[in-house]
Length: 260
Ligand SMILES: *[C@@H]1O[C@H](CO)[C@@H](O)[C@H](O)[C@H]1NC(C)=O
Image (cartoon, rainbow, N blue to C red; front, side, top):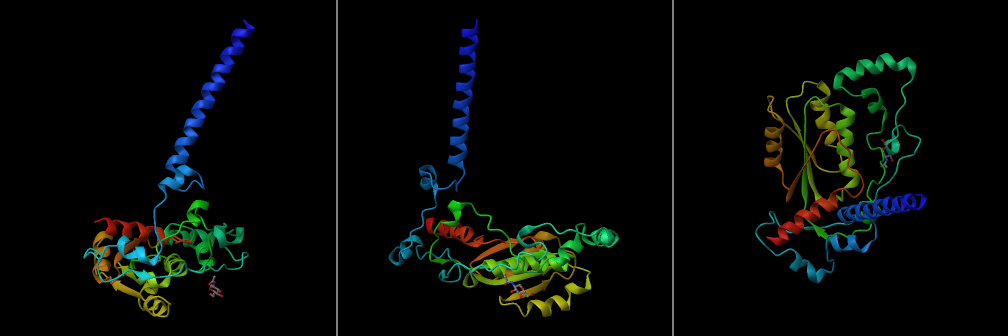
């Protein structure tokens, strides 16, 4: 009887181990960037980098609009002092005494605006890429992109943090311009003050207005019509780009252009 139980246990354990390994194997195979393993290398985007190959990689087809791809170097990403509020995505603690102020500000945009306003507009964030993704090489030339961001009564700090994150994480030659499309906001700071502020940024940033409430898609189309880049990238008005976000996206589209 004892012997019988021993075999049952063994079978159960062996079966579990086998399924565990199958599961693990599948996971590694379908995760594009699971480090250095051979399964991953097979799936890695094949990007040849020598100059002589460049022309073959991207046939001079009419599909690539508005000229040639641009040469760029990866953006040098600097960090703010780590004790600043919210750096690296740390939580911002609001003191008990400020609870009421926090609740009042919360009502304006339905999130903790008091905390958001204390975080630097150019705060640094963790490099969230997996190890394998950090080491990936992308073509030396990529298409340019226009960044279109639609907003309606967006908070100043979240909107500007989105804009700064684009500027601070994207290679400058690849960004044709940032286009902010205001879908009939009523907040005063989103008027002239915003236009003046963005006019001083290091990347060309335009503010466009829909005039009357148009909805997200119509507003995006207005931005798209005004864009001069080879690709259009639409972003939310309250997101932050992190290191190395842009190159993989542009490389995928570039590859697609090359295939057609
Ligand atoms: C962020 O902006 C502040 C000024 O507002 C500046 O002192 C700091 O160097 C900037 N940080 C980075 C990483 O560029």
